[in-house]
Image 1 (cartoon, one colour):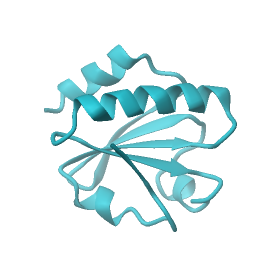
Image 2 (cartoon, one colour; image 1 turned 120 degrees about the vertical axis):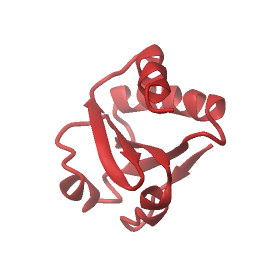
Image 3 (cartoon, one colour; image 1 turned 180 degrees about the vertical axis):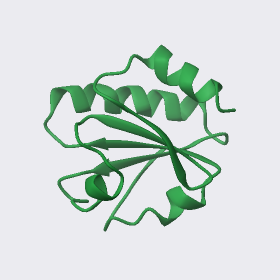
Length: 103
């Protein structure tokens, strides 16, 4: 399950051992494709990794705070700190390998 971030509140993300945040915007084709990939991946890693979606149109402060310059952007947080960010379309296999390298 992918939780939606509201009001720029990343407290759950920062409290997670491993969290993936999908920074995106509604209506962008690349973002929609990444959202599907993240949703599928979230189901497969339930209980191991926490997944979130931050719509940057709603959470306008978040991109600046977390250095997101392009979308879609997928950021991995480990113990509340940014580990890495991947921008643009990322195949599911790449996302899964990235997660596996951190488990």
